[in-house]
Length: 373
Image (cartoon, rainbow, N blue to C red; front, side, top):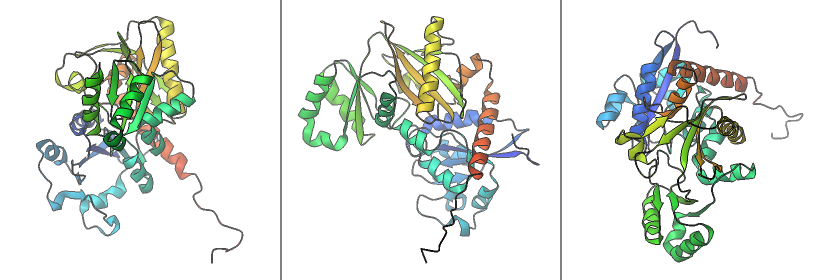
């Protein structure tokens, strides 16, 4: 890790314009608590549900209370702003940030939007870049990439939500021709199981689509797998990633929905999962293959489905996995001998190393002639 004369200044981004806003607050609280204060100076930066950025020690409190920030502590309002002429002390301090940690889940945080902004700033940031973030966030595009790589997935169909208004019967017919009940209906650009429903017949399918349409412009329908086991492993690294042990989620509800993940506290995690060695190894190998195929860097959690006939399916890769005290990403690494603080240390190092590599690239080209004049 590069040596700094002072503590490394880490800006932790949290909140955001997303249905996973509250999950982000809990994840970020855990990250801030576990960052070694002997090594790092933490700069909390909250993003309200309206898209306003606020900085300072009160930002987490403001977001959790739902209070609107005053103009005096607004960092970046949700309209175009010339930061170079800002008189806001918090904005001036941005130039001193060493690494940004986007602990943002869902749209406008995990989907490449914030990553693209951070690329423009030239700041080092933790996690996947713009391309991998956007591809992994959109489950339709992610599945098409994995499909092109020949990696195993359940069958799926998708459509634009606008098509539902005028072509409901056609869409239902296509779904029923391609898939069998039960199916899972998802908004492809959400996480934490927000807007996801299981449909066992046509009536439930229609209601599930109506629910999902509230969250996304696309809808994806996936083939359900009965008596399935939900398995996960954590991946960490840039060009040479490593993978954790495999864990199993035993959801408290019919599937691992939002309430089962965060609210009722009744879901169980078996770490490591009770699996034959060859099955666990196959899952780990597939996780690395998918991670590289999707151009992931920094971190991701790879989720799998194991059917009773032992068929294995990649469900998705989550590029900013939960970092709450009960989240699988840190728990899987802890079971692999890597502590929460060590994970954060390594993520920071990976971000700095990647940024250094990018800084060494040429971004200008001098033509042989001034043809453009």
